[in-house]
Length: 151
Image 1 (spheres, rainbow, N blue to C red):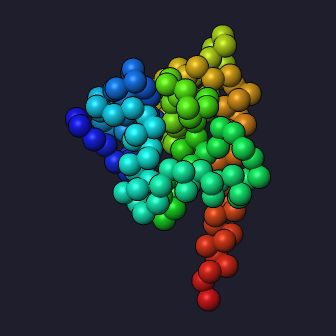
Image 2 (image 1 turned 120 degrees about the horizontal axis):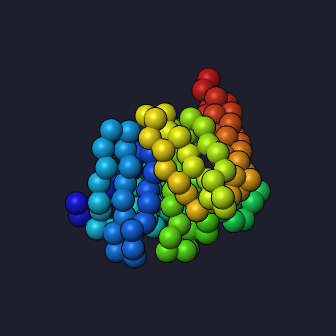
Image 3 (image 1 turned 90 degrees about the vertical axis):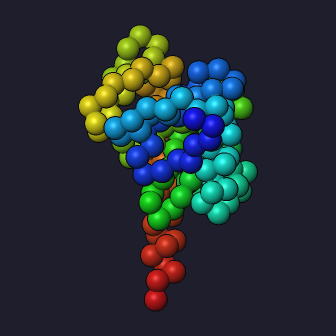
């Protein structure tokens, strides 16, 4: 597959190497000829913004500066968080809405997704919990702002 746009079925974006990425959907898996950053950036653009614009907004909303979750598309609640710095080649992106539960496995964390698929990620349990918390805060701030726009 040449390109991929994140959608409501996208659970995780997992780099294979700098040129290819495995995309896990609720009921499918794709190998895409883009790196994870390119998928995030093109998906943000597809939904009307840029990755850098979404990152800037997340920084302001959360008052944080690193490893920020990104709102790829707000009406479908597509919020993804990175497992490490987004500048690192092996940074995975996870849709926090698909996480059912998780557990520590050595220095990694195994995530059980809502479709009952398990995947180990190179992220500590504490760091994962922090990323989930940031994602929840970002979603909460966004919902409050959208609610205030309605008359």
